Amino acid sequence: MSSWIKNFQDWNISEANRWHGKSIEEYVEEWNSKFAGKNLIFFDTETTGLHHQNDQVTEIAAIAIGQDGEELGSFRKKLELNPGILDRRPRAEGLLKGSGYWNDKDTYEDEQESLEAFWEWVDSFDNAVLVAQNAVFDMRFTSRVKGRSLSNYNAVDTKDIIEIIFLPAIIAASNAGDEWAIEVLDKLPKSGRTGLPSSSMGRISKALDIDTENWHQADADVKMMIEMFKTIQNWLESKSGEGLDIRPSQEKWISRKRYFDKKRRMNRKKSRFDD
Image (tube, rainbow, N blue to C red; front, side, top):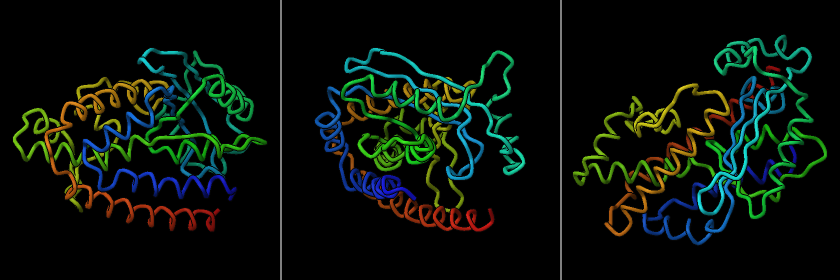
């Protein structure tokens, strides 16, 4: 495992801890102080599976949003399947169908060349911050490009913002009688084990009345992510100053995150052994 990947795994834990214990007001203030004046690169990947060392990227898409909310540019490529990948990863075929991989209108390019082109595109923007839903997953897969260190890139995980700030705020606002929060919460499926609402980007977007057509296709997911993020940020800013206590739900999300992080590490070890 490369050192930057290990550092990024450490970052994933510290990123959640960064927001843990923060009020809505503190989150809004920290976001505005650290990310104001940055160009946000929203990006997403589709892959043949969950393991960056054994699977591959099949599609990558991104949209750059400027400091004033304007679109600065976009990037999209579908990648050729590496020789023997479907033999080694037979379950990948179902994922490829689900992500619309075999579209007659698409062209397919070499994985290494496409990933290198992506990072060159990212480098064309000053003060860039990468934004992704479950950022560690996408960063791991885009790290498959050879001869490039990614340790200096800044990234934000929308899933952590959803779980540690937004959903606890929705729950607190709902308990306080906020009709919009009650409506959003009612639309979200709940976990049978924890009772916590789903933090899935598609589920959140549906609850926020955002178009989810072609969900699980990278270019559509990026557009969905941007609209979801804007809606969440605007709502959190509107609730800043109301004094909603989001700490009780935060504790539940942190406990859940630690449980699933441990489970994922065990599954990765098992997968490497099985392969």
